[in-house]
Image (cartoon, rainbow, N blue to C red; front, side, top):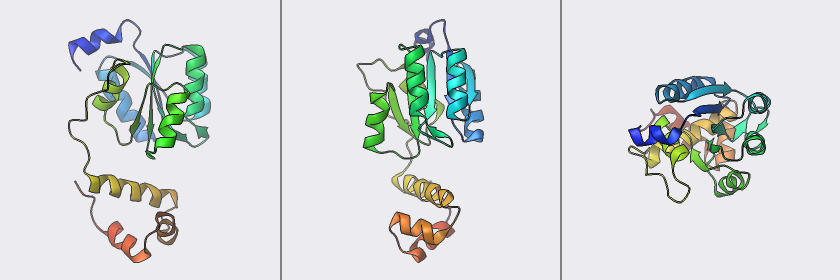
Length: 184
């Protein structure tokens, strides 16, 4: 993070992180604290709303899909309590419809997972009239595809037949993909 970006943070550096992926949440929290933020974490919509009621953050990073509902409910709660806060929505399901919904309820930006701390900071601190810079080291298309397949596979409780049906691919093709190592 540049000195200029640190100055952009101002005095209020409170950051709420809401994600049900606990290892990711811990890693992101540590990374953001190293970059000057005062982080609070929540693993559900209910916990996120409770944190917002107690102490509305200046910044927030919210996962779109949480176990107990939609992260957009947390974004709306933030907007009600602190309209000027900057909110980035993260999701493993990048789609235009969800991006539009996130922006409509007040998200500043929308990023697909996995996003690193630098991408998130660029999105949080970008001026509203400019786009954040492209990622330095984006994932390859093969890696994005592999990550998506793995996510659907996990959501289907590691059931190959159900995953293949949902991805509209042959079961044997999926088995071959799952047997290989992840691409770089």
